[in-house]
Image (cartoon, rainbow, N blue to C red; front, side):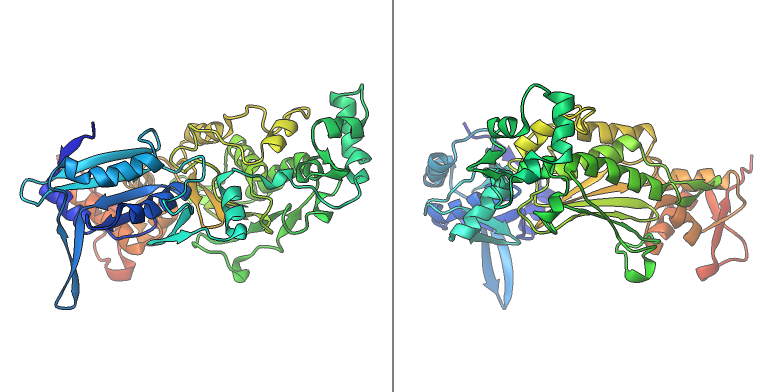
Length: 463
């Protein structure tokens, strides 16, 4: 039984005013059910989304005007629901709800689609992906291969490379590994049993783990670039670059270790202004370690691009090639697990003191470590061809609390100083924060100041 919910006037207007985009689509009840499966396939294969069926769009004197024209009753939607049920059985990945407004015509069917593990096809037997407000068909072998890699149905780590297998069977790292972990067998025999050498060729995983220099076989798609920008701006430019980008190479076990050490070293030289004066920037080592480890182990190695770590005055950005795999989204990533590179994750865990010691708990550890330092949680962004994680040096305290605390030990504060302390980037936003504190009776504008030169001071009690 599909639930029917009554909505308010405000909710009605919200739906009618929705922008069709990467996450939402509005359809008339007159649309053919088979055509709707394209939109649902696209959402399921990309990041999930919502479809509202029963929203009409008409041209009125050159303007597009929407109106609520839903199904007469729940039975009138049976043809649409049957097509959906045949393709996508009602379950944890889909949710159907009828929406009803007392003064509007009929029931609008809301279909909520979650990102799915498997590739889902529409009724024309083609899978689709969502790009902006469009549902685009996957109608070539190359597009299908790309979707399989994005979804984690296939993994590039299993591909073999046409290189000399002795690069992994006779390397320094494989002998060191075997001596520590499996001293009773020969490298080549063990690598074959692990399916890391197939048909006489090493796999991508074998090269990443056991070649002394994987970048020779996988150039421009297995390195890490580290940048230091002396700015808090949204983008770093050549003029704010502190030094030439640092390239970190080597097999992934040592690469993770070296990247964490290099990033930590650079961060230790950064100072920020707080209410108590200048202080060194501190990020939890657990956070840096776990997020860099995650970027290296779960990136898409089929994409010819390096991992980029950008260190700003107020944040660290870690960007790894490839979208979040399978059904993973920024919203469920702390609760769900899906390894794009399963062999890489499993085998690196065999190394002494592995970087992924607590498999499945790494990101949770990273988030908890930020809380312990009273810093805001990292932000994860699933982009078109990469995943970017923002580790911001921003206090859990609100901007109002930070301004108030600063004025307890300092006579005045201006807009620039307040933005520096709080991480607020907009001058106008900071003004609104000042006005809010003023209206609450906490601060007053310093007499004799105004315009760009305005400063604020504590409101002294008159009691």
